[in-house]
Image (cartoon, rainbow, N blue to C red; front, side, top):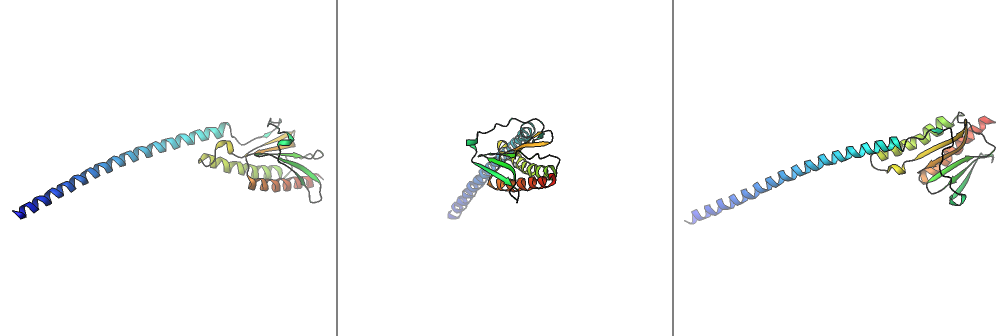
Length: 196
């Protein structure tokens, strides 16, 4: 009798355990189904986000062309520039002035300098290896969602014929400003040497 009671208790305990396991397996399947559905939804959303980023980059944030007509980039009143940096040759000849505001940089060649866009190393180095590369890096960061499209580095070269009138740059940080100052000064100095 005692043995029978013990066996019955074991059978009941085992069937309760089996029922719990059965419920856990059903719950696991439900969770897996939900996770699969969410992963599918996430992939769909990422695809849509990539498409939107691609359209934004294509339509509104294209690499700037070298403008033949001065492009209207709102000129900031002098008081809004936090810094004006003269770029000079090693002998002290003024090449250009850099007007720096919070998120924009305006490079204006000295009045007596007519820098031609065809004079190396302007296009081959400054434009293609510095400005374009910075823009491409930011475009990639925007494509992967690490940077908002409105924060992509952009530039515009305003010219009159082949003469550079100014270079307008937006969305740079302190490191890029340092790099831009040195590469622009070096580029203009090399161009000035060829003009002499």
